[in-house]
Length: 487
Image 1 (cartoon, rainbow, N blue to C red):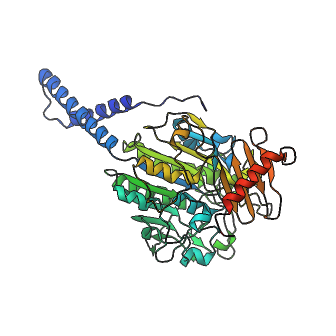
Image 2: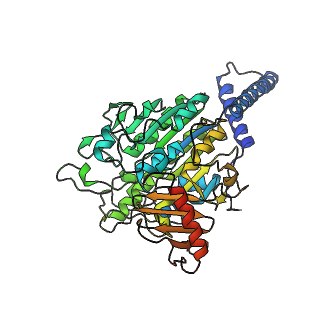
């Protein structure tokens, strides 16, 4: 583990001093009539002592309660699409700042490579083969299907036992039948879409309006990223006096879908004009690269507003912020609007090459993680539920088998990966990683290929024949794991 260079940020004492000064200034302005010199000094000392005591009480109360959790899941964003992961063009200053202030993971995995099962794994802490949601939901399943089986327990249901307020703002995509909706599954509030890639402005999905508040359709004007970010900020303001979970699964930066457009309306990337102008582009640009840049910067701005809201509420120290992508960017050549990049990795969404399953992940939790850590150990989206439960001093019921492992010590640079093996599967694709070694195959009747990710992260040199012992060991580990589940 190593740390990156740090930028200066005010520490806790500096923030408290600023807050005391600000409150004192306001109180002094309210004092009428103006006191004399001696009375002024006495009043100033009393007010400063009162304000300092109030801030100390607030800090103690926050330290005694479980941490707030803000879980931000971005959509189809490639490993190489973010500034702090090497992109030299796309502007993501808010995400980059989070990386400087917290932990940037270089080896973070999604255990399956498509939107729906990725979300099921994230919220349950269980492999899709164990939680029963292994496929991408169809249009009808998104609207009225069960999706994730009702027997599964998801993160907000655990956290409500510890008194958390829970809200979901964005893309649901794991079923909307009665019993499957966010407010049926532990969320107190929901504003978002039942399905996935809604139109950013009309909120249409496959010909039907798809924006919901709770369980009812709602008409709202605005850009989807802004609506979801603003709803999350409002939720946090209203629940700042108790621990909260804000799950914010943005639908950005999913590619626009022609089926969401009215007849004659072109299918282009959509973002407010100011984000096009940030790059010097025309606001009505139809260039796929320019549009994608604007959508990514609009997404970054929405994340920035959420982070700023936490800091303004003085909840910074005791809030876990997580930003991760649900899978890699699509690399299908027939989708001309898909311009995201998974560089430096091979492959993309729906595959188990690194480009499909290794994604960006950044965490900030000042009470536990130092600023500027780079975690190079393998961790996964299934690890976030056990991490959050441990932070909240909760345990899952004995009957629930979590596949994730608490990675807190790993993220802090104090331990190796909590996994001997991580396993991946989506449709015909599958694979496994152990340390520096990775096996992958594109169909069940193929032979596993072996790669040394320490020297070949682009998976260009198959070492299965050169290192048969390692290839055999990795293959057996995968088959033993896979044998737990029906085919």
